[in-house]
Amino acid sequence: MDTPGHSSKMTEVPDLTRATEKVKTLKHFPPYGSINGHSTGDTCPTCRGTGRIPRGHEDQLVAVIPCNDVRLKPRRTKLYVCVSMALCLLVCCLILFFLFPRSVTLTPVSVLSVMVYFTPDTVDMEVTNLINITNENFVPVQIAEFSIQSLVTDIVVGKTKISNMTAIQSRSQKSYTIKIDLPITDKGLNSYCKSGSIKIHTLFLELQMTMNISYLSHMEQLSLNTFEYIDCGTNSTIPHPVR
Image 1 (tube, rainbow, N blue to C red):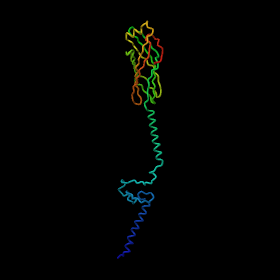
Image 2: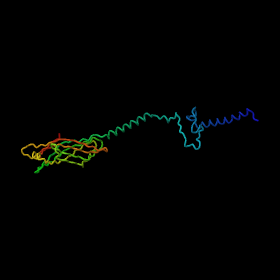
Image 3: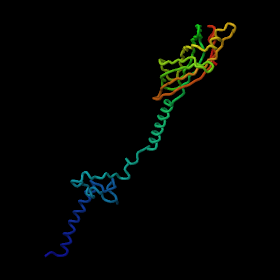
Image 4: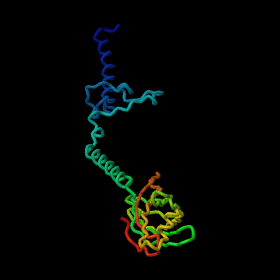
């Protein structure tokens, strides 16, 4: 029959064995929330403080990173964030600067010549004008169509449409010579232009210009009205600027 003292010794031996195994386990597997093995926190909820993963629970793992891990505190974080924001802002500003639509202007320059042909019933004139088209954009501009309507005393005397004009390169200006045919059939204007008693046969010609252009994937229409004077009596009109 065992004595009471002998029973207490037998109970202490398993306790010492368990304590020794726990110390060995903590040396290889630090407790939850510690990287040096000394912690007063809770045990790991995945391995339950044993340092081993139960079989069949591999897909239920929980990644635990200590709060004092240096990976959670990267160096120069604010500097990297500020530099990234500055680069994004710079790229956006450059895109807006180069792709922002700018003006395309149509400017009449001068009347180069006026050729007058008399027929029994009409006065046929061929007016040659010089115009400039300026492109302020950083992309080429395509000219889809260019049309001119000519009026004398609010009467339409001629229409001209040009559809084979070349593109205008970025940040450039291009000059075009436009020929306008003006057959005047009005009897009053015919008599005025053919009269020999009148020394000056000046007509004030109104030009209504319309140009359809395309750039940056959109269409745009430019309109311009200008006035110029021509001599319908003889071929005496000399080149002069449009005012």
